[in-house]
Length: 125
Image (cartoon, rainbow, N blue to C red; front, side, top):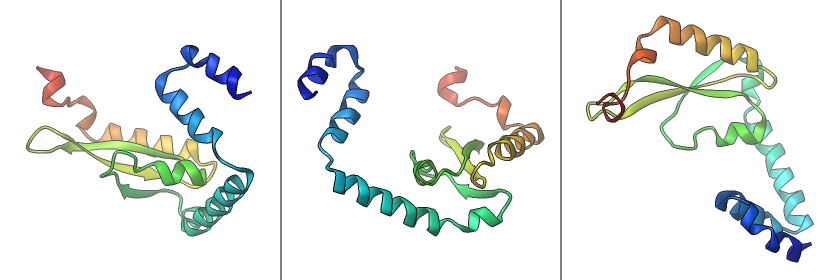
């Protein structure tokens, strides 16, 4: 199978290929361990199950990564622009299977603020 995948590399984007290759070298025990860690992460964010929605700081490029792993829906929302014109944002996180709620709250936030009409300086010039 490895040789067949190697021949098809030209049909795959670079990022996809890198991710596929990272997974190609994981053993079954690595996968089981990763699933155990995932269950631990889900247990650690259990308070989200009791909340309808929660806001979190979105200060990192991949702030949503923990929620991708645990299955909690999350959306990043613009909260303004810094003095230098960079986007500022927050993250709205909901309970598992709470996608509708998260999107409704996000839409309501955007309707109540002017941020949706602003553009960073690099785009607006």
